[in-house]
Amino acid sequence: LVSIESTIVPGTCRKVYNEILNRKGFLVHVPHRYWEGDPVNYGVRQTRVIGGINDASLEKGVHFYGRVLDIPLHMVSEIEVAELCKIAENAYRYVQIAFAEELKMICKALKLDFEEVREACNTKWNIEILEARKGIGGHCLPKDVRYFIHLKPDLAIISRAATKVDEIYRKRIVKGSL
Image 1 (cartoon, rainbow, N blue to C red):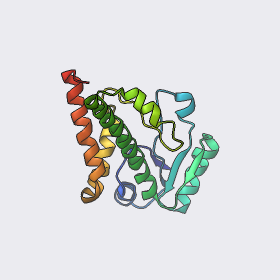
Image 2: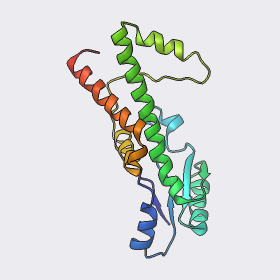
Image 3: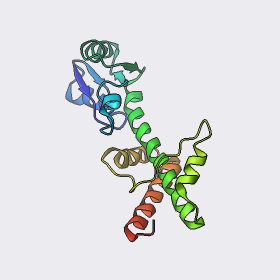
Image 4: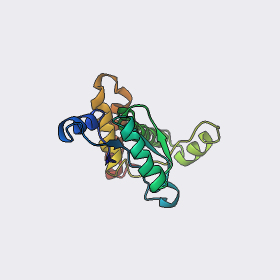
């Protein structure tokens, strides 16, 4: 059983299976989910998505991850669904953070307290504006939003705008104007 846990663009697993494994063996994609800020709740044993190159691969992967490692799984019908979900999750998170950054810059321009505006907005049941810290960093989010944009550049308006907002936000932090 070959398991790919890295974030990859859709179609990568099929290429690996066809060109490297010569259509032999079993292949699953189980995108890694982990948050070092809370490894107890968001560590290795959180629900993970699993997709198989075929039904036999999915069965072996479910046995290994679900039964041997005792990791809760969400099975998907196509391996490309598993490949895309990790990119989509991180691009979504990137956009959420960029929105918070943009709101913080708007608050600064209007001389309003960002935290007070954020707290007020978050009283609505379906709103959760994130904190705006020092820009969108780390390894995964910036890389994955670029993957997301690359998949369909003509449709990536929001993602491209989010990268621009983060760029402006970071420059203002460096200048000390935030």
